Image (cartoon, rainbow, N blue to C red; front, side, top):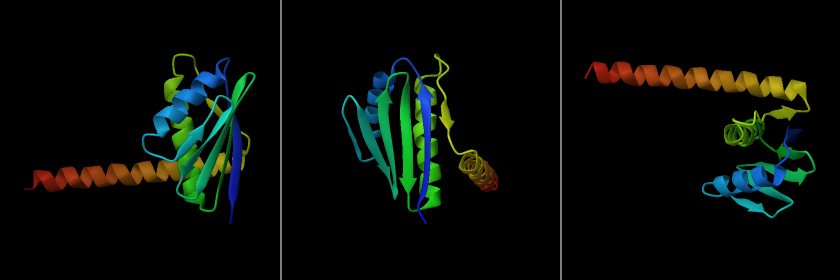
Length: 126
């Protein structure tokens, strides 16, 4: 099943954030971009970024739900980090998909915290 979601980061500097995001992600992921837009590929998901007047538009589509969720986290997380001083945030258009993403993210973070705690305990017993 293909899953898609769209959203935007409202900013008066969409081109700047497009370039910064694509340049940064290109260090680890397949990325193509120019002044108007770009694409970022993570596993089976493709994030299409478009700089328009007043916002950076985001469209993510993928064959695997988990890859779409991970792409949402990658794109939104980096944009929000880059634009923290300006209060930049990503607004997703599908509340149902966003809630499922947030639930999965919380589940994965809790699992990782349990793994870290287990590793600490094992090191303490050595």
